[in-house]
Length: 240
Length: 288
Image 1 (spheres, each protein chain N blue to C red):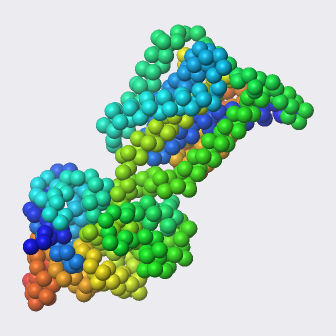
Image 2 (image 1 turned 60 degrees about the horizontal axis):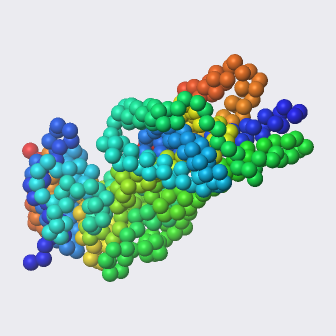
Image 3 (image 1 turned 135 degrees about the horizontal axis):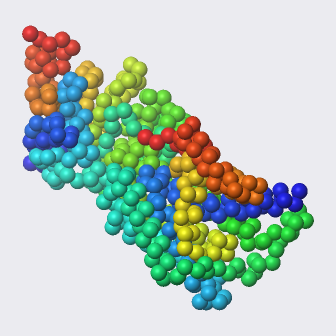
């Protein structure tokens, strides 16, 4: 059996002395979309930060196509094939749109590597903004740029942390279409979302975190049959 | 009239010299958030290097000397950054103390090696004859210095603003962590920038030699000027360092000519106002 695209086993992460992730484990199949869900403060972004190497796990394993990556530097992890679209987008504001893409470019062994033209084909709005400073873009355009920038590294696994956050409904729909398109092209994706509808619409499998622990890991179809679980961990009101 | 024109030209040449001194400081500060207090000592090393090399080999070209000193000082800087400063990430106080300590070490070593007397650096023979500007005679070499500053500024601008490497450096300035997450080797770029900044200081020390001479305490005279220029112009801004250099060149030249006893007040007062009321400087980016 081929190794999982991304595999976390019993990952423990601390912020200084506070224990945030308590033994998180899940697997992402190649070419699939995994939705990472949970309330605010459940540890979703900490989980993403641990995968990309911003935080070093104190214990546990993270494997990218079978290769252990836990504890490596972010640049090494990026070079090995993880792309990040971070929470808050974090485009480089004083670089132009084109520069934001170019600095992240990596040819590598990809069959059909991403380049600026392909990103502009996917997001025509960005090509109109080519030499504009990225800091002057609208929120939606910045989100497109953040996705494009991550793709320029030809990631084997793409991490999307709340891509719909703070965007108008029309733009959220476009983000949703973009994720579906990437999935169709075979991109493996971990998607963190507060927008449950968007996430469950596109995802194959799902993981629910609650205070740093996995309370569900399985197929989306299975999750949808389990309304109690959804109400308890994702609903606005707690089920009593 | 003659006073104003001559002092104006002096201001320009001092501005050129200050840019050669402070552009490297600004680069290093901008990318690495590191106040490299060794910078004045790097400049002085360049001047001593020139004093020795050009007095040993009579017909040594000053441009070759500047290149050699630039490479030598860049190497010293690179070693210092790799061996010591990388261990002090996220420890600004430690960085200040270590770079200041290093500057004392270099300056004592120079004193031991070159002695306490000031050593003149010869002006290149083909630039010794004065030039007439608006009917006034003015030392040619000082005008050439302005040209050097403009050439350096142009090259640095091209490197930082127009190349992929420069864009990677600016990405590191904007958001260091995110730059690493897209695969930019920020730590190696830091070393490169540190070498570049130190190298420019070393070469600037050579080019400033014919005006300043090599003497103990040159480092301590130059470091505050670099600080003032960078604080006035804005940290990490090349344009700021350029404009700031010429503003300080003007203030310092006319200040010392008109009110010699108030020179340091005239020099440091603008800096204090800038820090108090416009901490990002004239052209500074607001750091993240």
